[in-house]
Amino acid sequence: MKLFTIQEANALLPNVRIILAKIQRAHRKLSRYRDDAKKASEAAEQGGGGIEQGVEYATILTELTVQLAELDGLGVQLKDFDRGLVDFPSLREGRVVLLCWQLGEGDELEWWHDVDAGFAGRTPL
Image (tube, rainbow, N blue to C red):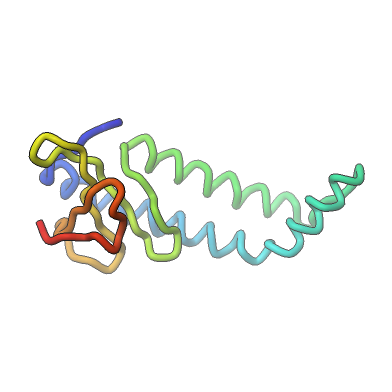
Protein backbone atom coordinates (compact mmCIF):
# COMPACT_ATOMS: atom_id res chain seq x y z
CA MET A 1 0.00 0.00 0.00
CA LYS A 2 1.35 3.39 -0.98
CA LEU A 3 1.32 5.98 1.78
CA PHE A 4 0.87 9.62 0.81
CA THR A 5 1.90 12.83 2.44
CA ILE A 6 -0.72 15.56 2.22
CA GLN A 7 1.46 17.33 -0.34
CA GLU A 8 1.77 14.22 -2.52
CA ALA A 9 -1.99 13.62 -2.43
CA ASN A 10 -2.70 17.27 -3.27
CA ALA A 11 -0.31 17.09 -6.22
CA LEU A 12 -2.28 14.13 -7.62
CA LEU A 13 -5.70 15.77 -7.35
CA PRO A 14 -5.76 17.26 -10.89
CA ASN A 15 -5.01 13.83 -12.39
CA VAL A 16 -7.44 12.12 -10.00
CA ARG A 17 -10.19 14.54 -11.09
CA ILE A 18 -9.69 13.57 -14.73
CA ILE A 19 -9.68 9.85 -13.97
CA LEU A 20 -12.78 10.14 -11.75
CA ALA A 21 -14.67 12.00 -14.48
CA LYS A 22 -13.88 9.17 -16.92
CA ILE A 23 -14.89 6.56 -14.33
CA GLN A 24 -18.19 8.31 -13.65
CA ARG A 25 -18.92 8.66 -17.36
CA ALA A 26 -18.26 4.96 -18.01
CA HIS A 27 -20.21 3.95 -14.90
CA ARG A 28 -23.25 5.97 -16.04
CA LYS A 29 -23.07 4.42 -19.51
CA LEU A 30 -22.83 0.92 -18.03
CA SER A 31 -25.85 1.52 -15.82
CA ARG A 32 -27.97 1.77 -19.00
CA TYR A 33 -27.18 -1.89 -19.62
CA ARG A 34 -27.97 -3.08 -16.09
CA ASP A 35 -31.21 -4.92 -16.97
CA ASP A 36 -29.81 -6.40 -20.20
CA ALA A 37 -26.66 -7.56 -18.41
CA LYS A 38 -28.71 -9.19 -15.66
CA LYS A 39 -30.86 -11.03 -18.24
CA ALA A 40 -27.74 -12.12 -20.14
CA SER A 41 -26.17 -13.38 -16.93
CA GLU A 42 -29.26 -15.36 -16.02
CA ALA A 43 -29.47 -16.80 -19.54
CA ALA A 44 -25.77 -17.71 -19.44
CA GLU A 45 -26.50 -19.99 -16.51
CA GLN A 46 -28.79 -21.89 -18.87
CA GLY A 47 -26.15 -22.11 -21.61
CA GLY A 48 -27.01 -18.99 -23.63
CA GLY A 49 -27.31 -15.26 -23.31
CA GLY A 50 -25.93 -12.04 -24.63
CA ILE A 51 -26.54 -8.35 -24.98
CA GLU A 52 -27.78 -6.85 -28.21
CA GLN A 53 -25.13 -4.13 -28.13
CA GLY A 54 -22.51 -6.40 -26.61
CA VAL A 55 -19.52 -4.82 -28.34
CA GLU A 56 -20.43 -1.36 -27.05
CA TYR A 57 -21.04 -2.78 -23.56
CA ALA A 58 -17.66 -4.53 -23.60
CA THR A 59 -15.93 -1.35 -24.80
CA ILE A 60 -17.42 0.69 -21.95
CA LEU A 61 -16.58 -2.02 -19.44
CA THR A 62 -12.99 -2.08 -20.71
CA GLU A 63 -12.73 1.72 -20.40
CA LEU A 64 -14.03 1.56 -16.83
CA THR A 65 -11.58 -1.20 -15.97
CA VAL A 66 -8.65 0.76 -17.46
CA GLN A 67 -9.53 3.89 -15.48
CA LEU A 68 -10.02 1.93 -12.24
CA ALA A 69 -6.63 0.29 -12.78
CA GLU A 70 -5.02 3.70 -13.38
CA LEU A 71 -6.45 5.05 -10.13
CA ASP A 72 -5.42 1.91 -8.28
CA GLY A 73 -1.95 2.14 -9.83
CA LEU A 74 -1.58 5.58 -8.27
CA GLY A 75 -2.40 4.06 -4.88
CA VAL A 76 -5.69 5.95 -4.60
CA GLN A 77 -8.70 4.07 -3.22
CA LEU A 78 -12.08 4.66 -4.89
CA LYS A 79 -14.87 4.53 -2.30
CA ASP A 80 -17.95 5.77 -4.22
CA PHE A 81 -18.44 5.95 -8.00
CA ASP A 82 -21.30 8.44 -7.96
CA ARG A 83 -19.78 10.90 -5.51
CA GLY A 84 -16.25 10.55 -6.82
CA LEU A 85 -15.11 9.77 -3.29
CA VAL A 86 -11.51 8.67 -2.88
CA ASP A 87 -9.09 8.00 -0.05
CA PHE A 88 -5.32 8.37 0.07
CA PRO A 89 -3.66 6.15 2.70
CA SER A 90 -1.35 8.20 4.91
CA LEU A 91 0.52 8.09 8.21
CA ARG A 92 -0.72 10.22 11.07
CA GLU A 93 0.81 9.99 14.53
CA GLY A 94 2.38 6.63 13.65
CA ARG A 95 -0.76 4.92 12.33
CA VAL A 96 -2.33 4.50 8.90
CA VAL A 97 -5.27 6.81 8.26
CA LEU A 98 -7.10 7.86 5.11
CA LEU A 99 -6.95 11.33 3.62
CA CYS A 100 -10.43 11.82 2.20
CA TRP A 101 -11.54 13.85 -0.84
CA GLN A 102 -14.48 13.88 -3.25
CA LEU A 103 -15.32 15.59 -6.51
CA GLY A 104 -16.67 19.06 -5.90
CA GLU A 105 -14.33 19.74 -3.02
CA GLY A 106 -11.43 22.17 -3.34
CA ASP A 107 -8.01 21.87 -4.88
CA GLU A 108 -6.50 20.57 -1.65
CA LEU A 109 -7.39 17.86 0.80
CA GLU A 110 -9.18 19.09 3.88
CA TRP A 111 -10.28 15.86 5.59
CA TRP A 112 -8.98 12.62 7.04
CA HIS A 113 -10.50 9.69 8.94
CA ASP A 114 -9.42 6.50 10.63
CA VAL A 115 -9.41 3.42 8.43
CA ASP A 116 -12.46 1.96 10.20
CA ALA A 117 -14.37 5.25 10.61
CA GLY A 118 -15.38 5.89 7.00
CA PHE A 119 -16.85 9.07 5.57
CA ALA A 120 -18.99 9.74 8.65
CA GLY A 121 -15.81 9.98 10.72
CA ARG A 122 -14.18 12.69 8.61
CA THR A 123 -12.15 15.15 10.62
CA PRO A 124 -10.62 18.42 9.35
CA LEU A 125 -6.87 18.25 8.72
